[in-house]
Image 1 (spheres, rainbow, N blue to C red):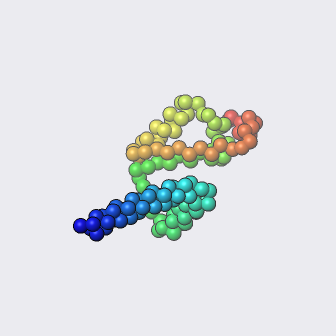
Image 2: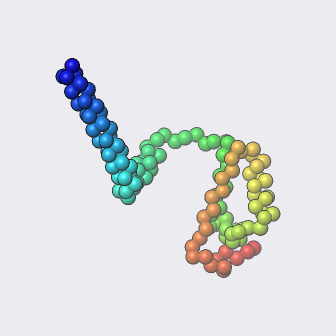
Image 3: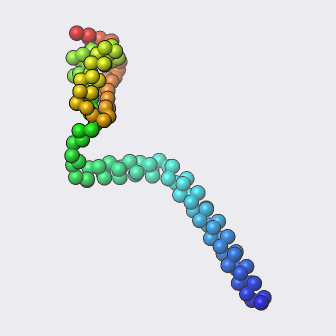
Length: 118
């Protein structure tokens, strides 16, 4: 009987040791995953994935409105008046997308004379 109880103690001790080691390794991995080289590597691998995947079909469910320098030059500086934004959203809404995304490229440095209102 004594031999059997020693085995149970050794098993329980090794189980606790294994659990502590795993918790220590988990904490170490979590700390390392927040460091700059790992996050940079993650971003580079994500970029590589998107470059390597085949082209995806264009979705009719999402409408993207891209406002760049030439658009700002044509319609004036940001922010635009509410009625102009309403006209823009209304024109996009007529295509019946499920989502509308607006991407605004604001030029730097901000200069009032850069895009005169026409």
